[in-house]
Image 1 (cartoon, helix red, strand yellow):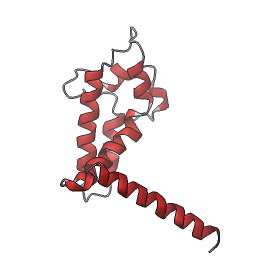
Image 2 (tube, rainbow, N blue to C red; image 1 turned 90 degrees about the horizontal axis):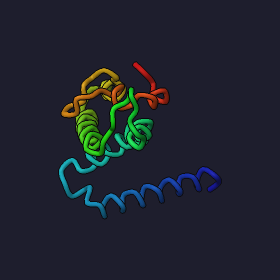
Image 3 (cartoon, rainbow, N blue to C red; image 1 turned 30 degrees about the vertical axis):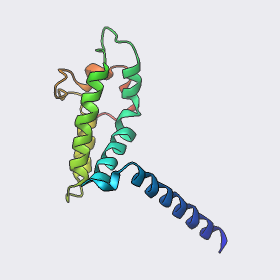
Image 4 (cartoon, rainbow, N blue to C red; image 1 turned 120 degrees about the horizontal axis):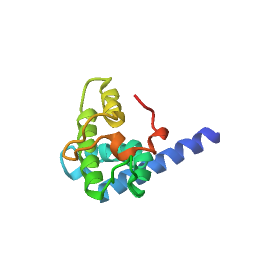
Length: 130
């Protein structure tokens, strides 16, 4: 079968493992469960596990507001909802709108009375600016 066959088998094994784990987590038992799981993963990958996590873990400064757990939770929840909507859209360019929301440094975060600049000052150089 050659090297390509081994890669194909590895991919199939990874897919089988992922499907089993998703079934164990109950992802397929709820309507849109897979889309919710994908939205959560997308937010973790592009938002939560990035420079904002470093800001969240650091002490506030005279220029940067404290990014408390509740604020981070609210933002993560809101972004997950936005990602869920994007993943259900037929608009092939809708993902770019999500990118704009994630990177918008001036938009007031819903329910948080602050912006990405307020909470991420000093850590945003690792993120692409608008």
